[in-house]
Structure formats: C-alpha cells, structure tokens
View 1 (cartoon, rainbow, N blue to C red):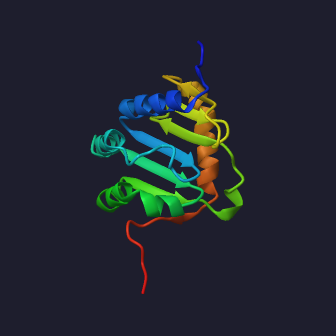
View 2: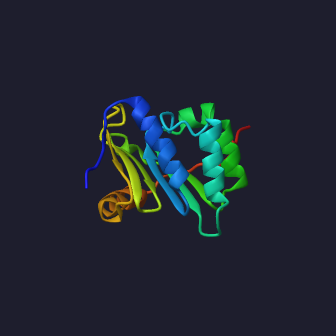
View 3: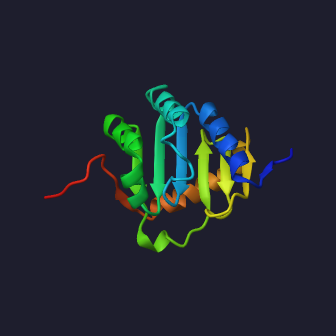
Length: 158
C-alpha cells in the first residue's frame, strides 16, 4: 500500500478536512498552536462538533506547545471547550517539549496526518492503517505522559 506524501499546504488542508470527516470516535492532536489546523473555519468546527456529539465515547484531545495564539484567536474552539469539556480537552505541553518539531493529527486510531516538521508542509497521510497509526498513538501517549496545563474556556484575572 502506498502512503501519500503531502508536499504543499493546500494538500495538507484537504487531508485535514478528509480526516475530520472520517472521525467517529476520537481525535488526537499534537501541534504547536493549532493555527495551521484552523479549527475556527466553520466546516472544521462543524466536524469537530459532530464528532463530539456522535456518541458517549467520542473524545477529542488537543495538546499544544503554545496556548497563547489559541487563546487570542480561536474563540469558537474555546466556546466549544466550555460546552463540551467532558469530551474535549486542550492541554498546553510543558516547556521542555517546545523543541518537539512534529505535528500529529490522529483519527480513531486508524487514520493520521503526520507532519514531519511543524513549519513545513511535508507530511504523510495514513488512511485506514491501524498498524501504521499504532506507532504514532504511542508517540502521542508519550507526549501526553509528560503532563502539561489543562486549558479552561475562560481566562481568570483580577
């Protein structure tokens, strides 16, 4: 089986939309700040909402290296976090993970978009490949195991 290599941002955008449409149980994301994933786009937000409401076991877990841009520019995602906090979690990774360069988007443990370096469009798209995804699920679990700070939907202040 051939695994498609993505070499430009527009093909990566198509792959993201394709994967979100396939999601039925889980979405796992590790990314610098989610800006390239553009969850604020209406179609992507609708797919995320559809996933979270698709069943009692549906879940999305997003781990970011820098929560600042997300908190400033993604109000729809934060509002969804407020409404669906039992099924959606967003965690800011600890500082020692800022050097991790890859970006992962894993759907249902069967499909994935694996960007080799967060600043480059080169990526692999895995479709219906649970054995290939197993390695990346393990990588995501390692990143999650490092801890981090869960984000809330509101900013506390004085």
